[in-house]
Image 1 (cartoon, helix red, strand yellow):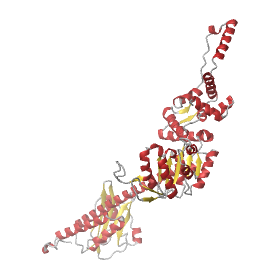
Image 2 (tube, helix red, strand yellow):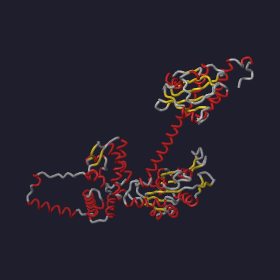
Image 3 (cartoon, one colour):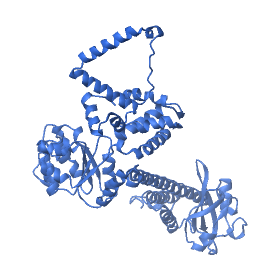
Image 4 (cartoon, one colour):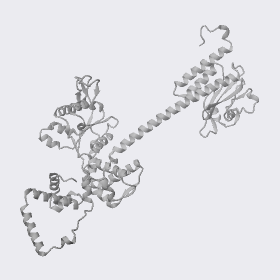
Length: 544
């Protein structure tokens, strides 16, 4: 709109047309910047120009990917058939010439000019002129914008070229921004899909490495109970993959689209654990500067994994029992009862039955947690899985560190016979250490000296025997008899309780060395059961 105080004598002069032109182009720019459908907005802008009489039939052409053809992107007053026919090669007709020369092409009379090919079909006799303006960006010509003009058009050719140049530039600018945002949105969506697939492939049962019978039994149990909301208690030594199992249960359950929240109860002090589990209100304690949701509240609609559940205090055991029974709780310092819908997966490496017997763990809570007990075997009881895990983690770290290596048969045997007291976590860390420290190529047993535990190295490295000098072996028969007699007397005199225990310890160590640390074989050699030798190893503090 022109200002109210705009002089009447100037309303018909060139200044008025310039003002209206600027105002119109501004409205088109606002339209393009606020719309997601760029094609529709460009066509609306063309119709606005037509409505004010500046032009008639108008089209925006874009170069194809090969930069050999100009194809219509947006247009007005063209039928679908006319649009499909309006494709120009570079240099073809006035439109193609504008792209080839990177200069505007103006045809004053289209009825007697051979450069006007009229690919867009029949024209009204009132349409006299044709203007094609190249759209130039930093990479060169990217398109052409064209228009047919009537004889009574209010602007001269220079002004029309300027207006089409501005319209083409802002249209291409808006289109480029839209394309960039669309691509970034697609990239983000692809990344989300990729990371989701990665997470799912990492934790799905069929992708958890474990072909041993005992692990297949575990998978079978979990696949059966995962669709339910029953509480699961995962038990096993440190490093056996309890969190991995919990995440896999979540991902194949109906709650897979909900949150998966985890918390290690042993990693947080007693005073903070209650706040972590149930949240707190503002001002509940000294540092409670704002309200904070706890893990039970955050896990609403999903799964909560509580590791080291055997380490929680009796006071927290009471609150945990209540939430398992009633699915409700109050934040620390609050009085409002909060309802939650959480599936709990707990884990521990402690003997809860013994703790219940000693009064350290509530019996009713134990039964609430132990609805579905899942016992994860230690790695030493999954012998057939060890080589698979070794190969898996070796490949993983070779990819990460850009190295190529493989185990010789003797080196692989050493790893297979190692008892892996730290279970999968120790094996994983050992494989990374091997990839980082050892040279590329075939890995020999001696290369494992720097990556395996020292005591295990002693058991598996050849023991040197010192042969006494020849002079020391040359003794008379009499001297020999005297020595033997003295030794027997000495031995008989020293057979105290401590010396007998020392002899037993040495015998166990020797048997372990000879059997490469395999306790069952060492026990068989000594005439013991596996349980007995395990007790003796612990009693004498023998490090494996």
